[in-house]
Length: 360
Image (cartoon, rainbow, N blue to C red; front, side):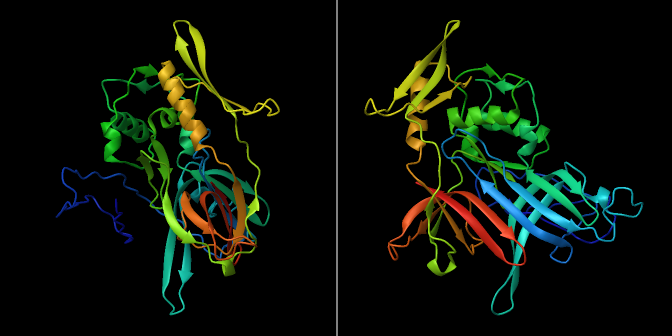
């Protein structure tokens, strides 16, 4: 899963990769991708305004949010004008990858760069003095694509997903246990839906997630992003954890086919007649029986949060989305409550800070 990079500006007609050792038994070596051509580097010297990085996940399996990167390039001299014959406008075309990282300096002067993954350029909006660039993680291609495909009981899930992501030119790594999952039914997806919607159906039915990694790959795994950070230092907090609004459902219904009809398994968790219905309806074409509908309804309900908090702090670049983070409130100093990081909005404007939402 490591990358090899040669920065020398030399023309090659052959690349030879020698593998001298494989640490994991029964594994094989695969070149995930090769990149050719020039690259452009942006730093604080040619960036202006705020660099914003938004990372988000939905452990409740109701949505599949996409990570977003926004940055602005200085254009005072017009070098980013689209009609400048010697300008740079065409060096950042839509659909091309951008890798982002934050460079830190330790007290002893040691410098290192903390990577935050790979994104795809989606929009460029210019003015006389700046060029604003909007990027999304590589799953954005799935969100923009409709395709006729499906799952077969003759092909394991890992192979099918590998074929789709390879066809989309999305760099990915599929965990070995995904290849052990055999679909229970042969199902053709509706080509009117996007690939991202189809992958959300797979996530709900088979617990297979597409997790963007810091290494720039989409990791296909049988679990959501997860990790352990520890306790957020109170001297790094700009605000104590404050309640953040979200919707909690008390009525879940999941559809399944019965002949030519559609039936619903209903999970009603209202405890009194005074409690107003808050309904979540799931129509997943991979759910084929009442038993599967019941299992999904129970799973979705059990994944729902009871509370969500938002905190602003100086940030620690080692925190990942999905990490369990302990946070102390105004009246609970020294006794942290653990929340799972479901939203991170990291901003750099000469200094770095973060708005984090945690749920439990």
